[in-house]
Image (cartoon, rainbow, N blue to C red; front, side):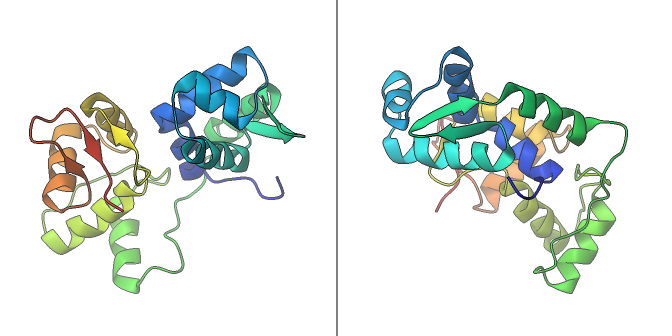
Length: 182
């Protein structure tokens, strides 16, 4: 890995339930994609995508066709990401100036949401930022959605409702399943 992922990349890598399940398998033994897919009853494509992200984040490494949990790198990465020195949040340079200003004003230096804006245009910018933590095509339980949102702000119910109302997250009518539309 040539470039150290930022805090948001690390949090995203560790906040997905399927990625954590994959880490659980790799904590027990090195495994190939097909083996992980079989053990976890996931599609090959989903496992491939999750492993690619985990590899980018430094949690796993690939040797021949086997993926191996890199516990030392993971520990080091955790210490680097959550140690005493904190990165200052800087909005992505490809965002328009208005979005950059909204994010700078409403996010803490660690990327968590400092204040939820009341104005709908500003709220939409925050929701677009928040929905990036969800992988398109992956189904989430309400508890998993709340866990991801809680990494950014305590108001999980309000932000979850806002994400659904904005069409950034979809849900079954009974609330048993959430997903990010493609």
